[in-house]
Length: 249
Image (cartoon, rainbow, N blue to C red; front, side, top):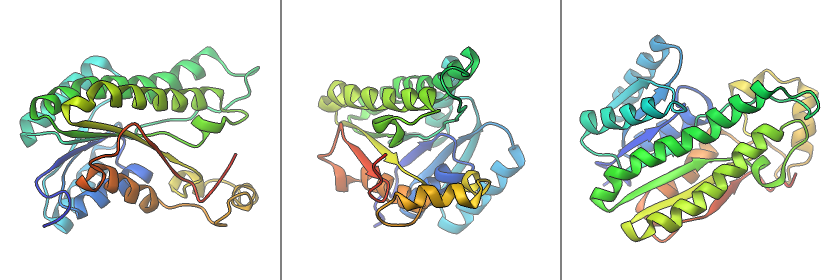
């Protein structure tokens, strides 16, 4: 039997990059997949069909902004109705609006905090209700090494990711007695569609400081998510797992 057979996972921002890698890994392990996307309905439909046909699981995409409180409530209700259960929540959706503090606008600050941090509050609040009823569940928040160490030009992003870590640990203490685990994963430099647009010299500067001398892949992050989503981590909660090749910023 596969590790996640019969489980349902909800993954935000799963149409590309790390989120896509997570969806593929959990589907491969037998989980039914609900995922959110913001823009391209056509791309989401293609991804639905690819995952479903390759792994033989139920897959459905939802066009939803997790940062919207009522949208998040509706999303969880729709997933419950369509899948009958919700066992795993992966809060992955996030954005960057980098700028030095002196140049950062109020809008750049608010947008990042709203998308990255408020979405985690919204979805965890609503997803924890069905999990409490079944007295089991795994909440996995995708934070960042930047949330631990900070990074110049990313005060908004680092704050949102640090906030996710505090939230993760608090929820672990609140919901542990109900059989619900809450953990975070802090990726370092992960090579995705976004990093492909970076100049080669900038990429090399990052890699120079990584002891393993390479960037990570979405699959590296997804493997850690699989561990936290499955019963292999049944006594692990309130933790932050760094997937960063040893990077210390």
